[in-house]
Amino acid sequence: MARVEMTMPKMGESIMEGTVLKWLKQVGDAIEQDESVLEVATDKVDTEVPAIYAGVLQEILVQEGQVVAVGAPIAIMETDSAAAGAAAPASSPAAPQAAPAPSSNGSAVPYLPEPQAPQAVQPVAGAEHQPGRFLSPLVLSIAREEGVSMTDLEYLPGTGKENRVTKKDILDYVAAGKPALTGVAAATASVEAPAVAPAPQPQAAPAVQPEKPAASTSPAAPATRPAPSVSGGQELIEMDRMRKMIAQRMVDSVRISPHVTSFVEADVTELVNWRNKHKDAYKKREGENLTFTPIFIQAVARAIQDFPMINVSIDGDYIIKKRDINIGVAVALPSGNLIVPVIHNADQLNLNGLTKKVNDLAARARINKLKPEDLEGGTYTLSNVGSFGNVMGTPIIMQPQVAIMAVGAIKKKPAVIETPQGDLIGIRHFMFLSHSYDHRVVDGSLGGMFVRKVADYLEQFDPNTAI
Image (cartoon, rainbow, N blue to C red; front, side, top):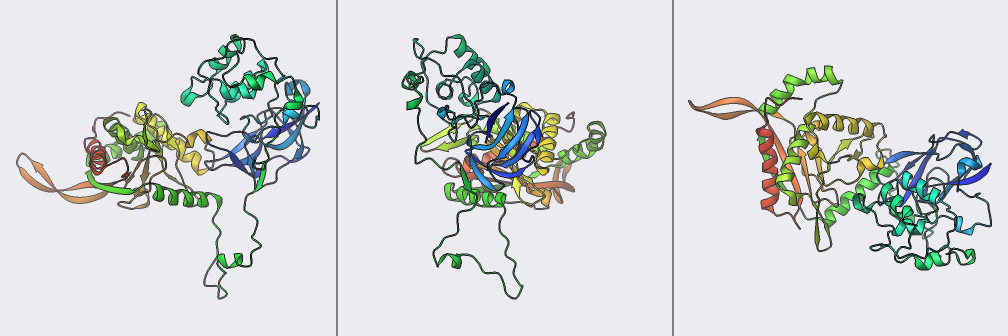
């Protein structure tokens, strides 16, 4: 049997730490491979962390409520030595290089490849240091088997999305004899000398931090906390973790982006009649509700294709134009908080595909089963304030996006209807579209034309659309 450390895994891009919410297993419990061991919360999503290997939980190193850096040890397991493979004993003093850096890899077990002699081959061109990059479990598994160091993985050029290392990348690297990567020569040259292995930097953040800062010893500190009402006329409620994050992000967005909002009213009578005609049959056939939200998303995706400069973000003095159209949809949670799962490549889905995707994300969001990738990569956001009976709103932009749209409740109104025989008064279905945009890069003409185009797509909805 071998004792191995279970570490805080990397649960998505830009995620550097997580908060332990709940241990699902206790010391002494037997754990199967891929069985959930604990619940972890990040600034994006709450998720369960599975065990990489089967074994017995020997020690819990981090208590519930504590914040842990990615890559830091959180527990010790006793596993079968053959199953553990390259994992070294957690308590072995002869392997100082086994101590994981806070953002060393995305595995739940420390990655300890065998030391390799430096290769006398040409360095790989185009290698660039990318510390803390996201690495899939498959890539880490291959690296472990082939003895590829974590340093090499941080320099290895990737051909995947956002320069991620793919299975083909690491296999090609191994097949080429693991050539030295630019900037890695010094590290590989000293791999045989454990005495000079890099020691933890003194300025590094501690692996485990308390979730709340320690109370100040200053006498003035208590004055900053509101006192509870003696008469009982007030109640002091501390924000939960998600509400604190929402509050901070909203403040940051208003500070970063000068918001401007344009409004358009759209006649969606044909759309309403079409849904009323098909919703019961769709419910019977698919077992899911046919809502307006997928239709709104489809119209937004089409309008983005017409006005691609809405699908951008800002980096300093540069505008980053996104090719993918990834539309986030705001979902209200039972707790009263809000979360925004993302429909990736929304322009490539038909109406049935969008309906199923929206229903799936909304259902999993409400039971706290979203994955980190469900919340990443959004390029534009839609908020359906009409679901609360609101006719319009002025939404706040999701950073680093530059625009967001709110769709209001659909209401019947009397309207003038133009016919060849003359104008008539009739009952029509209307709704407001509110488009908030970042005036640093989106001027009134672009912001106004975009929301008008979305309204046009909704008004021109084909009543013969099949689903």
